[in-house]
Length: 50
Length: 442
Image (cartoon, rainbow over all chains, first blue to last red; front, top):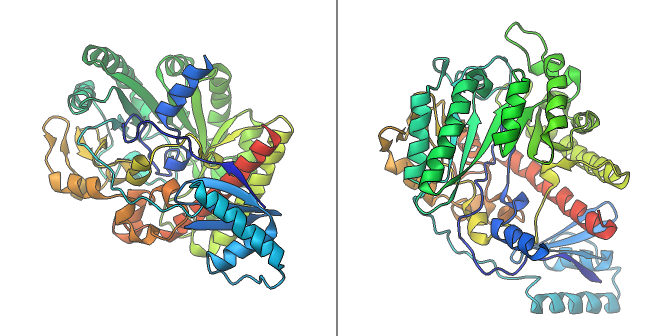
């Protein structure tokens, strides 16, 4: 038995460069690309919710 | 490539190519571990029916592109547009923390503050080199940025004004030790800072053992009430209280929980980066650290179940609305779209390189002179980091921190394996938490 927990959203645009910089350095709050959200998807979801 | 792992009694399958996460029963997980990953797992107990069911499930997911999906190896399209600057507004500090990577604020040079003229030139440099990017980031860093608060404030106002004229929006962040967090500063931060990062290592005895004032005394009592006040007035704006753990407090989950008990709901706890022998995280510490992340993971879930949840930075993972492949491959952008500016206006790939004159790339007054360094950083990406090729976490971590890689292994493309091990454990915890959050709807 396999149950899907999460799969990536379909994208209309990639490599737009809108996302924030992702400093992974431990002396700040080390971001990774994995814990970052796509700015476009987030914005589109907000518009849809409205 | 897939990664099959257990967390307590749960079995998870992460498909690296598609970025999908699945949960399975034990027979399916064991079958995939043995057949797809080549792990030495006993599957002699499996019945023919169980094997057939596992194969059918896998085929169905494969047909949907959610399992065994081919990995795309497209190199990122990197432009020369700059989108972020780390402004070293002050190369001095009012703390003397033993583990400080920045030579206790001085960066192996003179203790000095940035002038407003230099900060203005940095703003102008960023705008002029940002191409078509509309949102620009400016991160005030030190030393201790609040030791030069007037210039910081003036710079924010100038950047907003200059940005508006150029059709750009600035997002500001400040990282501070909180000692000078006055009412005036809090009011300014809440009005202007998109994010604020406040340093606190956890329990008083842990914090005070490392984070000392200039006169050698612990600083916990000097900052804790200021941090609490800041948070009480922060509203829904973003902030992090971030700590550092060292070899001296491998039971750091206690420090995270202590910070949460102070009313902090946004926390990060980072492994120290140092070569100081008694503080450094070494390979032999990894089993204890991995257990500690599990302890923290359980406590985190328990707190959420009790309605006292908090946000722990490393347990966040976005598998559904995450960044695109191009970003996952190109990572932080240091030395190409992100630079550090030191008090005299010189440019470095990032703050972690700012003590090393070999990495001076130019100046905000004259522009980028060392195009060779820029080219090295620009072409560096996940695919130039050969050690990452067979790592399941590669599209989540994008090959580690370039500075860390360089300082430990002498090459920005050579990941430091101790950091990798911690990253992989945190990713597994984050995936388990994601599954639990979805199952329990919190």
